[in-house]
Length: 114
Length: 113
Picture 1 (spheres, rainbow over the protein chains, first blue to last red):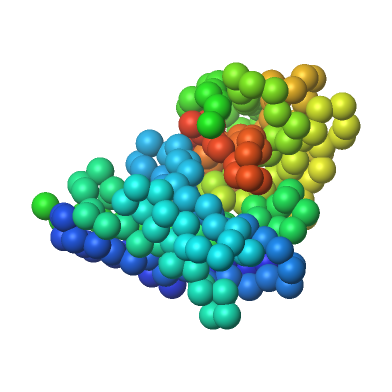
Picture 2: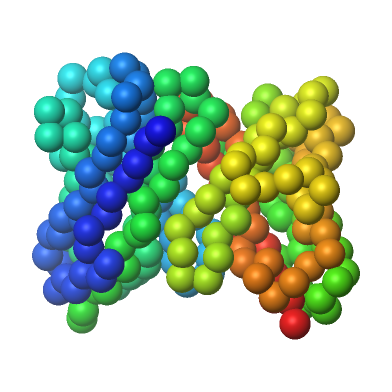
């Protein structure tokens, strides 16, 4: 079984500053994938970034980067230069080795202050 | 990525009735997934729908309550049967495209009175 833990139910960040959203995971699979999704109030789930468990480098996508520490089983999302439009729920998720089971964490609500 | 649409975008239904949600993708995909997100909660996988085979349901979800169709590689439906207020949720479909990444449709907000 896989498990994702997001310990921050809510976070505030000042506009233009960077913010780190925490994610730890537990899995017995030798290979897995880690994802971050953004869910604005409209309800859609927007894919942000992916990290494979055997990737040597941390993933980056524009203002998003994933701080992957395999030994600590953590996959924190870093958002640089926060914008008001970044206010949303953020979900961390893990994909199992078979590629057919995506397990989500409880989410973190990010609020960007002007 | 792909363009994924869902119909309806939202609905308000009476208890005891059924609602069928459609998911359409603009490219052929092997795996499609259906999720439920109850109010204030995270997403939970209901079932995996592969074309040409029966859907695979996760623990706690049964075919009689959530029948799924997958008639071709671009389309799937999820029916929420004999609804009760506890079924009020956002229902999302997703498709797997590249690098095991799942992309989601816009969701269907269901309220059961």
